[in-house]
Image (tube, rainbow, N blue to C red; front, side, top):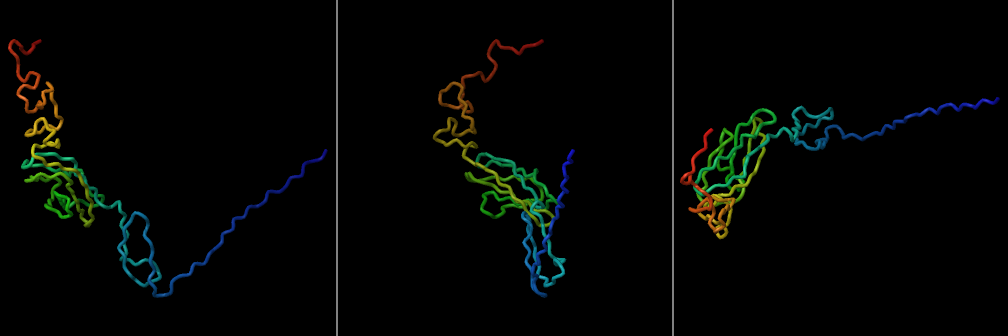
Length: 201
């Protein structure tokens, strides 16, 4: 009886090829790209022994987070409280809240607290920006929409069934063209009717 001849396993050899990388000459400055998602503060050292001790890489995730709630709608001349209390520092704590009420890139007011009350004296529809600063000077910004109108809603005057009263929903129970918010006879009882009493157990 013939026996099958066993073939020896072939050895697998991993070959590592070393590639020589030319280095900069002594005294040359070497520029190293920072990892993605980080910002770098660079210093020129001239040493080939490694990065300078005064070079720093700050991950972008260390920037503070800004939150401004919103959107906000109000009548011209009515105070509006803007709320940035959801803002926080990733490292350290927040030291300043800069409020830009017309989004022109310039802070109109700086506070140490996360809320502020502002009154617009003219109509304005656009953005309001909050920039927060932490103990290391890092900043974060948030934007929301604000609509300051003649009656406190965003319905155009020609389409508004209560042009002098805040009435964003334009409810009109009796369909007479006058909104419930300003209709003296809105089509539903606004007070107890004669003979109607509150039920008791």
